[in-house]
Length: 143
Image (cartoon, rainbow, N blue to C red; front, side, top):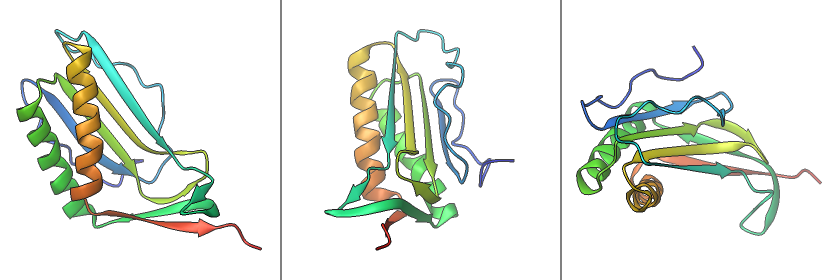
């Protein structure tokens, strides 16, 4: 299997929530979720930039304490779903070495309306950076 863990956020009758880590490249075109009442889908792709803190890099190395990251990710999605009416959320975060130009994070939110979908996506990204134990280390260009 491609993922580090198949443990997923507890699936509720509504909303559907998934948080997972992977060492494999993140695909950008899986089929849309078939979610009743879906009126908006917002997707955020975090891509590794060629510069980190003013230094040219070739990649970012992401590391995580998997069990804790999954637990915190699950709690994060539940908290967002309690605060914002979403229908489904999927978060996939890469760990390991991610070269410049590749996707390190995908957040996909389905909601009845665009306002809620955008708000939830933004909230998830901010909370993830603050509360989920995933660390990045820049890999500088060799001289």
